[in-house]
Length: 568
Image 1 (tube, one colour):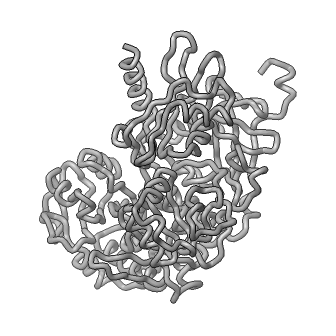
Image 2 (cartoon, rainbow, N blue to C red):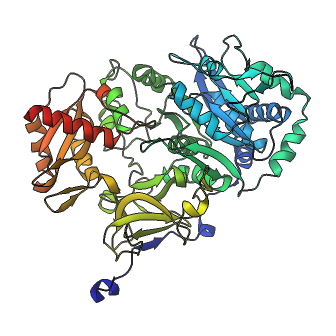
Image 3 (cartoon, one colour):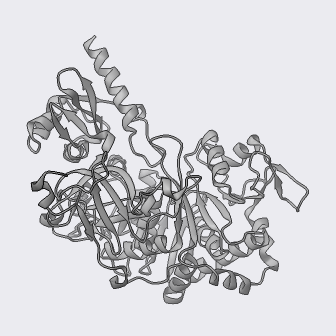
């Protein structure tokens, strides 16, 4: 920073509008959020779900509110108090919503757990979260979570009827399952659990919810664990509610949204994206417990879904489904016109999704964004501008000094949706002296105040003296016909330092060659960014995080071994 030319340049620091100037934001506690929705949209359909026998259960906003109060009454009867952590281990189903908001009304902290968890992973989540009550879906695909927990240790104690006494999980007192499967050990059924609250006056729920403030802990989510054991991330009601209200605005949606989520609500991004995008404007959630492509398409047709929340690898699965060309998706309104899905013969869309965006679980989704229908000439190549109240700063990863505008470094952030902290880690070890979270992501701010994210700092490829962003390469290769999944990594090279290697999963039934991929990449990338090697894998060979991201470190090792075998 002693360079006078560098010192005279503006610094890499940009702020959103003041929070008080933000429009279209309502209640800032989760209980207040649902109260407001029920007051505005009471008899309208809030959510629906297919049951095992093919029938459809539909809840209005009034019914969602009432069911949430029922859960809150049961939790109060179980001794839940302000700040008590209550686990939710469920797929996307109606009871997930009533559990989430019921916990908030009872003053508790909704603690979400992935249904992809193995027994070992679940043991870590239950122990680390310190939840006192666990509300679960017993049978998810081939998993039996009740059996897993019973095998771990919990036993029925004598301190209270049905209460658990466990040395392994000393805070855990009650487990209830939404399934109709027979009770197992200490796991009771949903009806008996709700019956616990019959003696609790609903007025007590209202009084309890009224004590909750926007600054109180509201949710506990866990990171996907790409770098090790998942970290518990505690967020306040205000941060969560701000994002729920904002998502409807960012989508540019009216009150007609019928949203379908492909992924679990136990990931913060999916919850805020589809719940906020759908419910904050009076729309409807169309629930599918687990993603099955053919079933999803049939569901979209039957329920006239007009907004889907899915990732590119799921787009490919939908397009590969046998009924892809048979279903009528003409209701689709909020689907990006540049998405491969918009090529379906029944879809006619002019909508542009808010894809120029950046965020993480620590900020409960986005801290920079361009809203829907922002012209491509403004948003392309960027990740948006800061949200209201947010400050984005780029710093040198080694010195911590703010970089000159336009120069890359580490993205740091602070603002109203920033987490309260990580479980078990003092806040002064999570934030710097100025209150910023260091994200571990690399990027820069351009002269228009737009953030450009370049990927994880430890993923940046250094080849032949140049820094290459694998994100930039993957964005290009993902558009190559026949590519289902792409992830670019740097493999050690004696001459170049690192070699750029594209690792690709082709779409089913498509034959791709390395030459085809490289030729496609050359049309849009500088020569030093074009992968020197292209490797093809089966999807089962790729190690994924809990949020379906390819684990870079494992893939880098796999690619290194594959290339060594080819050369040796």
